[in-house]
Image (cartoon, rainbow, N blue to C red; front, side, top):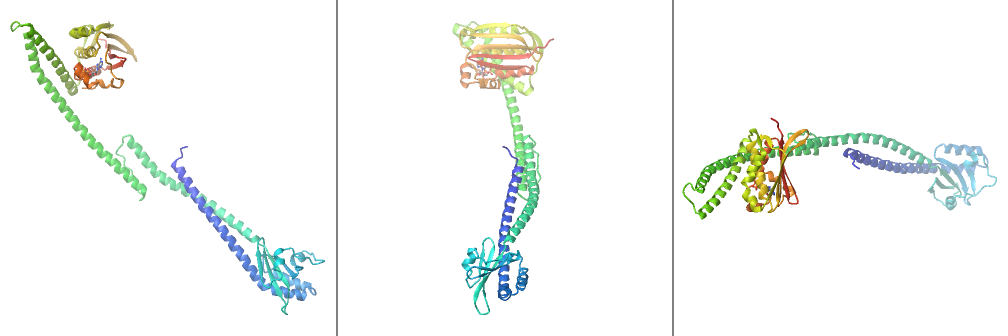
Length: 489
Ligand code: ADP
């Protein structure tokens, strides 16, 4: 179960304070018991020392002859000690000669009984004072008459009830004080925990704001303790993050600057390469057509190879130029209506030798012919998708091409699909292949040729049409799709 820090803190403080006060209460009670007991015993000792001779003398002199006088003396002494319960005068055989409590109740002995108290019987003959303070306080004092004879001992009984009374007073006082201190401690605990959790809440709120991207957060805690240190450390951390972000932003700007420079360089170089290449292609064409004189078979074959390689080079340079132009200037579209079926047919015608070589069968399902889009751009896209389809097909397979209209969220789209049977594309790379220069496997570029720009160019063009291009690949069948909004003129 999740318990807030504040509740835990209040609970901990509460338990600590409760323990301290309970301990103090127990200590005070024990201390008071000891104090009251020694006070009762001390008072009783003094009382006994002061009264024993007087009581002994009065017993001998008046008990039998003038009892009222004896009683008066006894009662006078009794009034001096509030803990006193009884005075007995017992002879050395253990027989009770006088029992104040019984006499005062009006009970007179017909025959004097023997004491049954083992402490009394054990110490009645002793010549010194004996004290027992088990359940009540009993003091035996020997009485020696004027002739030095010890015939009786005086036995005093004192009550110890005052101790329990005192204890209950102390306990009551401790409970009252404990409760009020507990109340006070709860208030203090709440205040202390509010102070602590309040500061923590400030730090945690600031941390959340930073997590949400507000790095300008500064917290102020001026308590001169660890919380202030925490706030300072926090502010230091955010300052560091701000510095790092500034550095990163500068780095990003620098990278962007260099990237533009690189793209510019790429554009320049492609452009510069294209001019001599176009001239070379022109002359090779001229030679091939035997406009500069007849050619033998070997020469024709060599020129054919030169021509194919120059065309390939021209295509790659064209791709480089397109990518750099898109990056620098964006894709510029010029919409017109055109017959996409013708465009597909023309492209397929250019790949007849390759398709023948692999014995590929093209299956077309053209349900939509007229498209309103940037003709040159869509042509480039088709060229890239169809050339890839042929390039990555296994021999003796089918190449399927389909166009149709689909409806999505009340929007009509023109959709193109091409599927081929071949090496396929791993699931996790279906997105990446649309990034510039990305190829599934570096060895494929060597085996199939290409520099990894075709799909990135296609994506630029399709996205400029507010469309979408994607690939699916399962069991060696790879499908490329693109869809663009079907605009009516
Ligand atoms: P290029 O074909 O010049 O390498 P692309 O951008 O046209 O560059 O394609 C990028 C990569 O996508 C290719 O290198 C290849 O790995 C993968 N690819 C594209 N089309 C197919 C396909 N029909 N079948 C299998 N892999 C493909």
